[in-house]
Image (cartoon, rainbow, N blue to C red; front, side):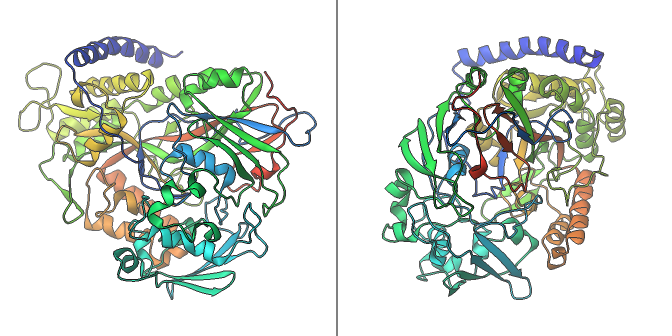
Length: 616
């Protein structure tokens, strides 16, 4: 371990004693930071606007890891894939892509997906799926064409009405989900239908039995990433047509016996506990090689042990990178790494969101309004040591606001803000932040005490240790930073406070999941509720518009627009990207083949086993 890491460890031991004392004091006084549970802010595959706290992950570019594996041994016929569903609460069991509200249900739906589009390595819709897409920016129309001969898992043919139905569900006044948003309103007639002044969405036109035409108010390159209001799944109209939209959420076709267009179909559901799938003999890519899949809920605290002892072949979805130390020595499994469509960041509160006008407004008197102060806080962060100590370098310092997974738009020439405490001190000195009274902390340029309130989300012990280290980094350059509420904040309360522009928050740590559409408009636009920093400017408006302009249908021009946006944000510093993230997958060696490469031709129907039971 190098000197820097020994220093980090010493700092953390000291700070954990302080944090422990603070936590004990608050608990004994009856303080409670937990808020009420609310639905996760997710969207179907695009899920572009969910602000997630620091869930650990692994990073692309680590040569000791692969994204696909072919294990030794002869594949057996059939077999049941045993999958650990990592969650500390029972799954909700909403098995519809238009209605589900959390990632656990989404992990289950991966095995019986009703998605109609396939995407390439750049997450752009291609022609390998159930449906193809053609978009015409001159007419603002898109044409969806489905393959002939595709069937639902009950043998009924897929119809163009099944592709239209999700739009009619999401836009309905009685819809109980969370996907009726600004993008969806881009479809002509969607708002009138939602208001109840129209019986259908006028922008939907059935051309023939396999073709749907959709008229939009505008079209951008985001259409090919599932944006602009395009929907990417089908619903079985022959089953759902007679169920009122307001009753779908609790209906049997959603909860008990949902249909599938995917490789597997539901056979048995034990609510909150397990799901048994069998192969879908009607799958359009061919009959799966496995007989089925069994998913069972496993608590996060015991999931590593369950994999090590051979109870399961793999997990549903990825494992957090803090689990890497627990699984890296497994002899019975391989570890795969997949770059995530996300990045961690430090955010600065620079204003508020006007809930009436639905616009972000800047506050020139905000505590973090000084540009040098914001940049200095970035230069003070020793991200590299944290990556090494906690993530085995499975995370890397982020240099921009577009994750490396977007190969066509990621710009590796951007340098970002790196660890340079001397530079941080220089910037603070130049801005007039100096220690006047000799207490080791800098005062404001006006000579007033400066205390910066930092909000972070609670989690395992790693979350507290990292928060303590960031606070020490800032202390090292003379900035007094304290935890909002005196401790890390439970997830729901954290979101409540950040979204509400709580005056006790000056800075916060979080992470954005971009989804398959890298457009940052929904995260940094002036009318985006997810623009948590509340930074706006005419220049930013223009840069965001350029990314999704008709000119940007030229991929080279869009790549340049992404670069211009990132350069501007690195100059204005409303947020500082800190870490690029990745997901780790543990695959038992009884699984013959697996591939997590984006855009791969590999599918679940090709999965095979070399033995009935996982290797121990």
